[in-house]
Amino acid sequence: MFTARLLQFLQFLHVPLAATCLLLPLKSPLKKHMSKKMLRTWLTASFGLLASGAFAQQVDSLSFIRSKRMSDDDLAKKREGRFVTGLPDLSSDPVTGVGFGVKTNIIWNGNRDNPLFAYTPYLMRLRANAAYYTSNARELTISLDVPYYKGTRWRYRLDFKAQQNPANLYFGSSEATLGRLRLPSNPGVTFATYAQYDAARKALRPGQPGEAAEVTDALSNRFRETEVMLNLKADYALGKGKWRVMGGYEIQHLSYATFQGTKAEATLPVTGQQTTAPNGTALLQRDAQQGLIFGLDGGWVSIIQAALIHDTRDFEPDPTRGVYFEAANEFSSPVIGSQFSFNKLFFQGRAYRKLPVGKRTVLAGRVGVGNIFGEKAPFFEFQDQWSPDGSINALGGRQSLRGYRANRFLARSLAFANAELRIRLADVKLGKQNFGLGVAPFADAGTVRDRWQDLGFRDVRFSYGAGARIAWNLSTIIYADYGLSKEDRLFYFGIGQNF
Image (cartoon, rainbow, N blue to C red; front, side, top):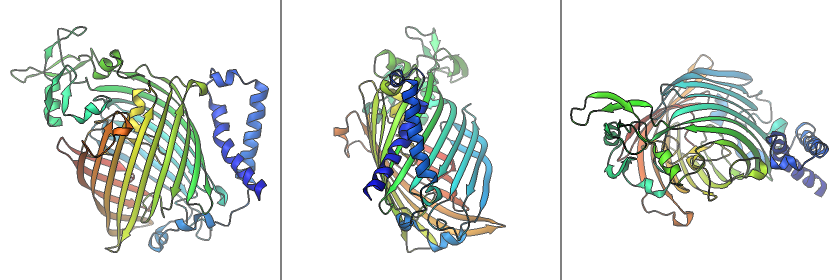
């Protein structure tokens, strides 16, 4: 028994470490100290253990996923075999604009006599998405997810992303962002709503040192990000399967640009007449020059990921019961080939409860708390919290505060909460396709701080709203959300539950 447990632990340990060694940049300090023979021996041993676990391990008794059994109602709707869900990607976001593209899923469910059929969302899913947005943003993502491979306790995931987004927003990187909106060129003037702020930043103004004679601030809160990313993860179910440990490795290259000097929209202060003018100095550039942020030059980021997960959800894409908790960590250092040093810690809890009202009424809630350590942690790492279940852009936007723009509140520490009441109104079958139609009123809250010790209930920002939901063959959730706050009113449309 001890030998078997030891082998299982070594198998888990070697999955992320083998991937890490394989993907380290050629000039990584770690590889400099490893001879070719040492590296070959390490990789052979690592992938030997991985292969013995993934391909030779006997099918488990499945006791470790008994708690994940789908409801009888959902199980009756689950399709057998392999099928494709592909649809034109029509989405809408206040920042990136209207998106056009293709979202495809190839899903392998197996047959109903498969012991895993009632306990997993699928046996394997290959997802490929490509999209172009009216803001000139573009994105290609490919992901592979294999839960409980061949009935074992292992789950493997691979994610690749290539994207460029010239519409990213930046309002600062400290708890001062909790204040009212203000222009980079004149922080003494504030605005109560985003509409007032947006109109003011387009006004033509005299140039400051280093700027043209007359400029506009229309693009001064924007920046362009270009990213290429590869992520490999594996997790292992412990005991009865409610707890999992996960390890992963991610490598990405990032580059950034701001828009000072670029021709942009402008209005004449007196008449309001439309014109164009060079854009003034960007807020991101100002903060970099003052040493308030780091990482504007971009570069290579190498990250080792680890997480402890507790998961009793009955159906991951759209749960009706169960809880999900995670403690997730990302570590980046020149020791593993990165150009940056930081450590990110994120805790997240979610709960789902089916209410005895209607066909399928689910109360869903989430709480998240995160902090980034490292004196010179790059600004772009402040913008999201890494989660094994999907990273969360914070704070503001569709994934956190739906009544505020993305990245509206940004600092080293954050806390947020979401609540939704997901009400199924009707189920419709068209040919072999099943559609569930529903609505989801929601409420969001969140705040940021410069130190995690100061997190609390002071200066909390709230938003609320309602959305529509269409569940296509259970696994594909189409959403349309309208969020409101004191500052803004925003509409979102796309695919996937918020949490």
